[in-house]
Image (tube, rainbow, N blue to C red; front, side, top):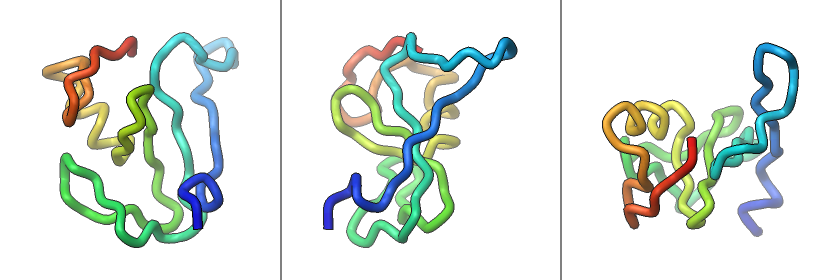
Length: 85
C-alpha cells in the first residue's frame, strides 16, 4: 500500500480563510496507521487520526514535531534542505 493511499490532504487556512500555498510543506491527516514509518524527530510511529507534514524534499514528520523544529532552524531535519515556511 502506498503512503498516499492512507493519508488525506488538508490545507492550512489563514485568518482570511485563504488557502496557504506559499510554503514548502503539505499537511495530511492519517487515515490508517502507517506501519514502518516513524517521525525522525520524536521517533514515534504515525498513528491513525494524527497529522503529518510532507516537505518538498520528500521527508515526512509529525506536524507538531516539525513546527517545534522550526523554532530553531528552517531546514529539513534529515537533509538540511532550506524550507520556505
